[in-house]
Amino acid sequence: MKLQKLLLFTSLLVCYALNSNAQIKSLGQLQQEFVDLRFGMFIHYNIPTYMPEDWADPDASPSIFAPAKLDCSQWAKAAKSANMSYGCLTAKHHSGFCIWDTKTTGYNVMNSPYNKDVVREYVDAFRKEGLKVMLYYSILDTHHRLRPNMIKADHIHMVKSQIAELLTNYGEITALIIDGWDAPWSRISYDDIPFEDIYLLVKSLQPNCLLMDLNAAKYPAEALFYTDIKSYEQGAGQRIAETNQLPALSCYPIQDTWFWKEIFPSKPVKSPKDIVEKNIIPLNRIACNFILNVAPNRDGLLDDNALEALKEIGRLWKREGSASKISPAGRPIISSNMAKRKPVDASWSHDMSIMDFANDDDFNSAWVSQPSITKPWLEVTLSGADREFNMVVITEALGRHNRIETYRLEYFSNNEWRPILTGTNPDRVKIHRFNKIWGNKVRILIDEFSNPPSIAEFGVYLER
Image 1 (cartoon, rainbow, N blue to C red):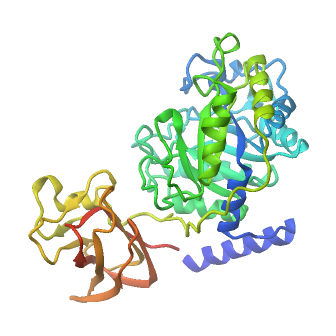
Image 2 (cartoon, rainbow, N blue to C red):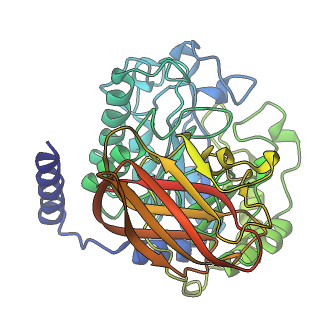
Image 3 (cartoon, rainbow, N blue to C red):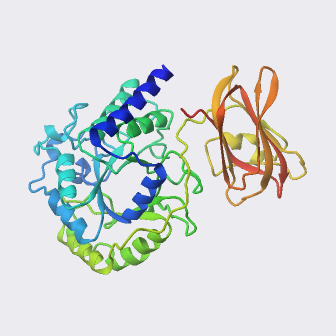
């Protein structure tokens, strides 16, 4: 089965290259090109536009989606006036309404009074203006009951089919921005809807499409966990550090909320000067692309105050040249962590920093070795039988950088401990990839440290 999947994946890549005459670019090149885009337009437009809240009634009738003057070319021209280089449209938001001609569900725009494919109109309009196109897609889907503790195989099939439609029928998509996955409010894990499956599907259909997950808060800023681009939602209090080196995205609405509200036409939008001086310019300096949300109204048009603000942004800021060269970010971690919440043992620590904190899937808690221990160790039991794996990731607690200086990784198989490697990685997130091995336990033996070691998360993975 694994060989069949590999052959299928390879054949899809070959077909992509032959049929599109496209150059398959390295991830590093794609990340640099994304940062070079600098500034774009987020377009939250979906069934919540026609309701008083951003979180729409999951059983709202498609009949309310009835724009009288929808004009995607107006959106594209407005983006161009602000010197933006791309757009990103909410093809499906959390309530599950699809604004494209999907064959996966009747809960879509073709069964609304509008009865036209909005995604098609959007991509055509933006490309006509020379702008790149991205799409937003929500994993959380309350209409189809794709929510915590209710996920079935049919849900996974629907997600894959919908993403396949979006990446097959609308030409080149620069990035697919996914939301509602592994977030504290959605509680749908990367195991419930397998991240690696989705990631490989995206790359098989469009190898040059970046996959981004809007969940930056949970994971360390020093490595790419489950995303090609690190994202920061300012409205959720996520702030990028001035020392950032990863390719990143920061998003923020020009109004108070993401979707249009009746008060928007008469309420002042955010200051164009502040958007330029406090967002675009400083973020671009630290390898971060800025995407400004501008919400169309119920007619399907941008309001006059938003249009004027975008023109003023374009007067104040010009996109001139590429951004500075980003540092290599390495391959993202995309596989499930088989050590998560498994039995764990360790050398002595105080009860409030006991060993279980090292694999509780929470980077804000940590196991901390008791100061008198001279040879700390931590051990995770994966299962009763041997399991295959090829990567171990050790994340030190925030604020405790470089406490672990030299260490050994070992695995237990056939009733004996065997070496994996000896490490001296000074990074907070220590990523070790190696040839596949089989074992039922993995441990770290810490030989040298500057202060008592503290591990926020100890992860074991099998990358395909």
